[in-house]
Image (tube, rainbow, N blue to C red):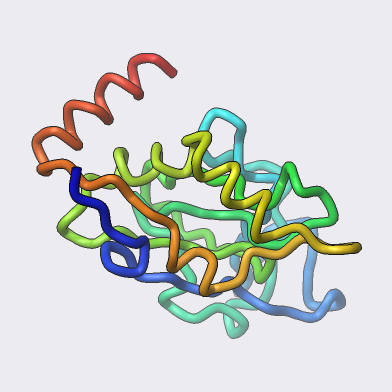
Length: 168
């Protein structure tokens, strides 16, 4: 089967950086909600609770989550958190934090299939191999770029995604 690297089929986007003093636990005019690693569910989805809110001036337009974006936790003290991934099921207007990255799939890959690739055991093993650190575990940009994605024809990707969605 044909394979591609994540960098060949998706754009990688870095999350929002902000000063601790700029963050608030409450929404307010002029502030944007920011998802973090804890908002990525074990079910492969995103959960929109316990957000932090930062000034909109901290957020670039590309850092707003879009439907079908795959949000990945890239830095944590816990190796089990690093690499955790979830797909955005809709455009809601939230951004994502600096300890996460988004892979935004291109037209050559079915987004739901692409998201399921980040739940495969091969991916998990790869993350455990490349991300382990002494105190903080990190997935670098190059690590995500090199993730191998099996790439059957798009109709087969859709069929596989539907089966895996139903199994979830």
